[in-house]
Image (cartoon, rainbow, N blue to C red; front, side, top):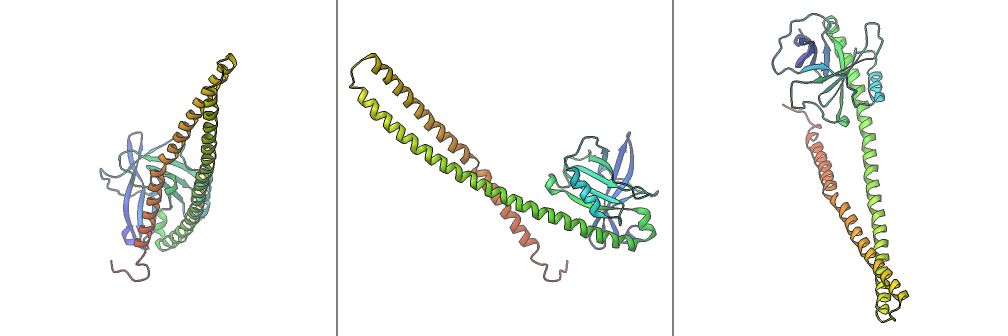
Length: 279
């Protein structure tokens, strides 16, 4: 029935409630290539496979900000029943009731696979519209048009959030650079101060070697030795601090390489957009 109306099923999600399995959502792609989730609100014959994801109700608070979830729900508008937000093995469903009230939130977790088939961090969440099977059965063309409109709004919103996030990431790298430059200034100042202090103390210490062996001179001599020891301890500490910063260099290079790989992938993946594709 769905195929005849322009929908290809990707995944069947089964709900485990009190050890009873039932089909609840279908993950589908329509003829426009847009992903949507179909709420099985009417009886239908579904063949379950052993590799179908099984969802269990998860009562643990998810990591997504409340403002993000509500913002995405409001963005979806009234053309669809709600939205599905996916990250890691978490599936967040925000849906309206028959009277349009909501959102009502349901949190599920996939518990029958060790492989994360969806984005594994919050910054890589994706949002898809939910439509009802009964609505597709009644007017498939209208549902397709609604999915097209809602998908465009959701993707534009996520994209704008992404661009804002990139600006924040760039600001973070500038903060990193400023922090390193600040450390360099402090390190140079401390290094010069230490070198001058050690040089001065050594000159004074040399004079005390030839000074009269009085109790007062002995006390001053011991203080000089103590101060020299502390200065050399500070020198070792300064070296240790430099090494701590350098220890993060490989990670910074790794992040830079990671972003370069993403840029290369973007150029490679989108290079054919200016011409028709045969397959």
